[in-house]
Length: 156
Length: 156
Image (cartoon, rainbow over all chains, first blue to last red; front, side):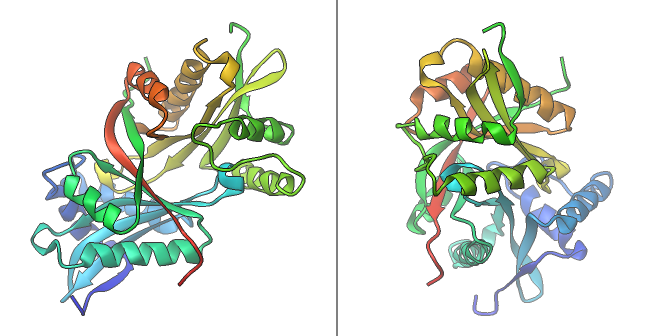
């Protein structure tokens, strides 16, 4: 993977990024690149691209998008006003795993988080992703928290 | 707790909010209201107060701040462009727990998250906070994720 390039995503990458999420059979979020969804994803990308606190990245090799992650920065009061970085929506193409692409993406995110002054890099990972959990622990991440989610229906 | 008021924090509340975090012996983040830290916290609060995606709240009863949480909104691509809400930095004064203050704060956060169009409300909670985990599960939160953190030192 010596030719791996990690760069900010462009509008032309959105379909490839969504297809990486779509291929995630283990713990995806119902993502699918369809005629109806395409404009929704493009609008969501435009929101991210215009937002100073969030950046969507792709990992590219031989002209193909093979990985993606979203890096977000959140101000806060705790930790004596620490800036928190969050690594979100991480995917590596399934046939290219265990070749160091994920480690390169995480290292890139850490460098960028340090550059922007974040005190901590955080992420949550579905409990089903046991391989990913070993991967993050190998990279020095402490599995210190439980992650809770509630889907919000319409107001009752 | 019928007189409980949940409202946006003001600058005058910052010390009380920090002291709630300072009193958290279980899983705090080294917070302490000191002469040196005070201006740092006030600057961090000013950043939050000016930011459209983050709001610091307090729960007040009889003129005293007895609880706090931070509600953050994060755009994203997954979940077909779903807006995510995050509940962060939740504290209830230790002598006033199990009286429904936390449940009122969570309900407030859910209402606000729905109003702003979030599809999901997420949070992480230190693995040591087993009582809090039962509390969130009672309120309909699924413990579906593991939360990882890495402190970022200076660049190597």
